[in-house]
Image (cartoon, rainbow, N blue to C red; front, side, top):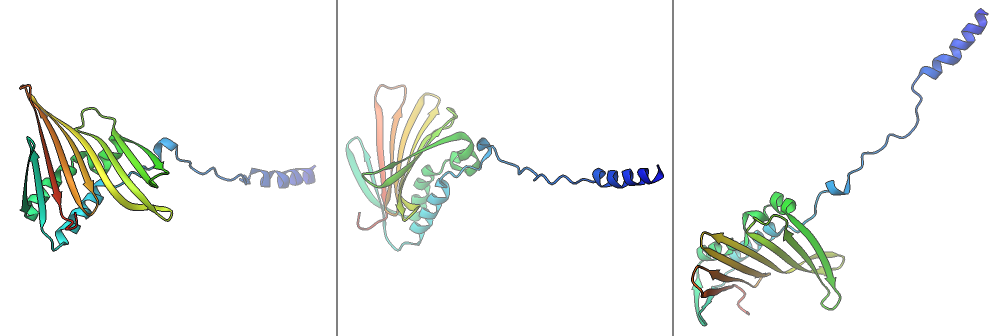
Length: 197
């Protein structure tokens, strides 16, 4: 009997050890928690501005209002002031990724891809951002243009802006201002730093 108890204990002890050889399940990330890979619009525009700062060329500004166009050379200070219109707070990484939805499509005719961002929050002045990109090989790294739409409301004044940045060449700010008066004020500012434009 004693021998039987020893034999039983001998068989029982290994059974009490943790011999679970099942693989530990890996932690999976829900698709809603995946890091977003939005185009870094703000960083790209800052790099474009740095490029303009380094160019030894004159910068032209064309202003069109009431059908009359005026042109003048501007200094870097004014260029920076106008370029700020393209960098609203909503383009900061956290706000952009949390408050905007992304969609995209590829155009077989032009061979360009468009990345379209629309605001989920109706209270944001920035409503829309479009990035047009041309692929080089398998990487979409040649930005052609960036387009933004903003609506700014102040008491009895509403301003709609359509902003277009053509990479390495120029930008345009088209403004439509509505007040309590019936007439609509339209203004276009175009800034050119490419001497061949």
